[in-house]
Amino acid sequence: MENIQVIKTNGAFQKNLENGEKAVCYQSLDCSVDKFDLSLAENSKLELLTFNNGNIASVDLKANLKKGAHLVIYNMVISGKNVSINEQITLEDETAKAEVLNVCLGYNEAKIDSLIHIYHNFKATESDLETYAIALDNAVLTLDNNATIKNGCHKSIAHQKAKGLNLSANSTIKAQPNLYIDEYDVEASHSASVGNINKDELFYLMSRGLPEAEARKIVVLGFINPLVDKISSSYDNEIEEIKQGILKEFSEKLK
Image (cartoon, rainbow, N blue to C red):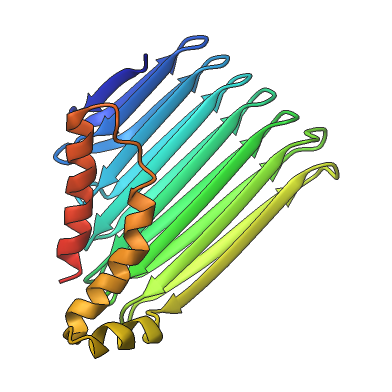
């Protein structure tokens, strides 16, 4: 049985897992955490949800994973203010694995900078980094995704994906995927795409009688909902409320 914890304190959050321990930590919607320090011992697993609605200007996360450890992170950012995200994840021993999903929505004059770097420091390590961005008004979002596989870290796997959706002529999304590979016997890939709302989907909904604003909202929520649905919520009723609260925040900003 996983150790379930809803984070309700402000400031720094630290989590150290012992060998084989499993934990689920979800940040409450009304608390502000600006620093995460994570340490995963052998064969442990941590699932972490972070949430920033603009009340924190800078968030730093550092994680170290030992042999067979598994880290899953969901970063949810909805902000009309400047936000800087800096995450460093180090895979220190074989079969350590990190999965990161970032969903960022910027509006007003927000400048959101997301810098994530995953270091493969041992053979047979694995990472999967996905970042999705939505920009409204005059927001500028920068997605700086990085993975480093050092020499000698053969059989390692590193995948990246970045996708952006611009909803305004004045908004900007910059996708910067980077792979630093110093070993031949690895599997690595990255992809990045930034575009506007799908006009065919918009036309279809409007042809069914929906106003343009409502049709745009449905299309964008169709982009967001599958991502938020990836967040596990079967552990606890309070965690399900947090997940639904995040969806509500996204929906309200799209009005």
